[in-house]
Amino acid sequence: MSDARIDPEVKTRATVVIEHGSPDTLLDDYIDQHAIDLTVIGSHGRGAVFDAVIGSTAKRLVDRLEEDLLIVRYSEEPAGQATN
Image (cartoon, rainbow, N blue to C red; front, side):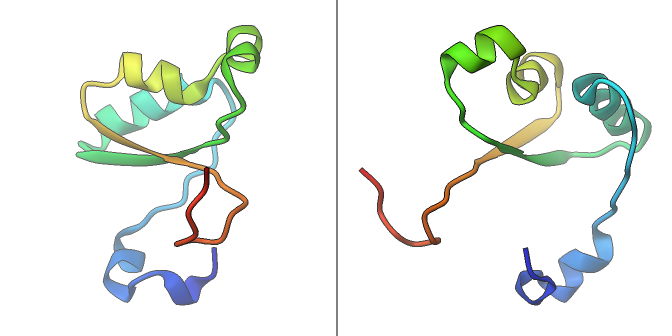
């Protein structure tokens, strides 16, 4: 995403953290430690078979987190275009 699309007020409150390990565990711990109200994550939407074999971080976070979670599905379609 281009920096030009991020509202300056939001950009000043965003934090980038790079960690190594299990994403759902790391995010859960970070959210608890920093009293975060809303977490926004992306999802590839690969499908049920892929998720059953590999697992879905988004699904595990939905099951695990008590805080609000917004999952944004990845799409190759430009924003604003309808898909069937």
